Length: 479
Image (cartoon, rainbow, N blue to C red; front, side, top):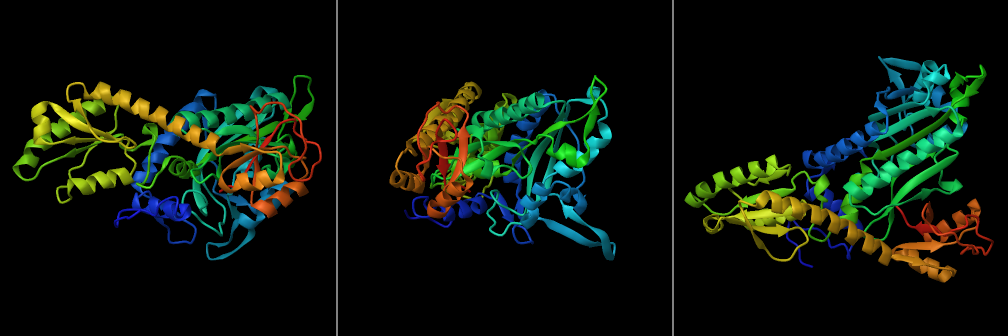
């Protein structure tokens, strides 16, 4: 495929190059001054704001309240939960000097906030009346990244992290699964990503968790992307930080806690789930501009067309549509068309003198072929319906692709072939060493034990021992 200076490498030629070029050419990000960091540009940040607003609404509707906790955490806090610090040790950024002298105790730049929030929960919780405690924070975290990739793996990234404390396991597990369902709905309903929800195997658990749950999406190269996780932490952190409450019986008991997070890597998921060789394809609910109007004409014609274009954009905005008029006079219409295709705008309208005389605009959708006239009078209603249909189309298209790239396998040779281009549904024995062997041989890992997987018995696709899960697991290469 030939490409001009605005184009990107075709996905079929080099998916990684396609992605790396696209995030810059669509002006989503730029590189930060420190290796592994990124600057999120306004167009990319608007996508995050739209996702964040929807997430924040849903989080508050489930009874959580937002708070904010310090960026710097005493190193001793992390060491209180041995499995937790061991799991994060290679990724920690540590401050050893401040105010011109060496600190008595090193401070860790937060990789996640279980420890500092656990310390505060221990201060704030004393009675069963204080439970459940349902907290969330929007924050940045730092995990030192050796192989950075914009949005997917960067040293600093944005996310939300929920942290809750409960009287017993049943209530904490309910919370863990509420968060998992929230993530699945956001992914499907807002990002049009047909994720599979379920539990992680023991080898893939969050450090310090008793159980970890995930939503996994398939990207257009067949790889899996972990798009949100929810963890039941048992009493591990409660014991480490003395998070206790007095029960109605008068006994002192440890709280059961949960934590859960979804990050800006979801933007990378949207890019890789929907994008094509022309650039981004954005779900309307996450598109900074849902409709872009391109006035056609130069000189006097431009002066004739621009005011009606602006008036149309205002009418669309009043109808709840994010509309934008491209007023860049120095650029040709053809350049603008390609530019907005690259940026993934769902709907483009062209308005020229002839269209204006006909009382219509020419509409193109990001995945459609050709153009069709839309009456200026009925444009708001028509475009609202068009955007809804486009959102639904993206979810159906991504679901069809995922299903076409998922193979049910029983033999090792079938498994090895399936994970080169997509996912394998296979039985597994549950042994960590066997998972390691599979990863060493194929680069594939156990992504999820699907919550909706049908009960089924069989033998491990790798070692032949009986299945440990009573259903097939999804295996795939991942980001």
